[in-house]
Image (cartoon, rainbow, N blue to C red; front, side):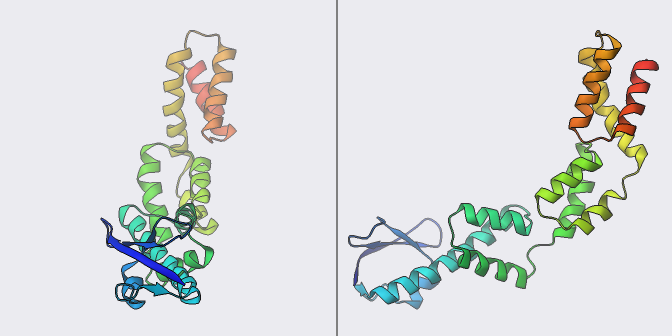
Length: 209
């Protein structure tokens, strides 16, 4: 049997449960669990009920945490799952939370990807390859990624590459042409621009300067 020492309210909507001689000083308990197991009205919990309660509590807390995360910023399924795992939730609890999120369609990855490409990524002048890598890391579907980057033409890619090249050129303009070329290639390749774009940019900067 597990003896309940006390129950205290946390600053959020949850509670702390103190169990005598338990391995953890306190256990965070979801409000639903507090009432469904009548924890306020009992002094002891048998082992089987206690273990069952902890499993259900994990699920409730994981769902609660998932909604808090999504309320603060948009996340893909992959990002949300990773955040929940970082919080040390069990796989069953993560699955429970994600089933709830999916059921009520709290995540729209296509819409999120579109906003990133037309917003933050556009302002930062990301290359196509950089955009693809960023979206893949977030777990966005390949078909969605390919459709979004297909709208970026070579002219826009060239302008973005030129933006970074000109910034880099300011710090190396006194170098010889070979050094300038080598460093520009390195800088633009690192940002994901393809060789054809890089070549056109370098030709413009070095030979038309």
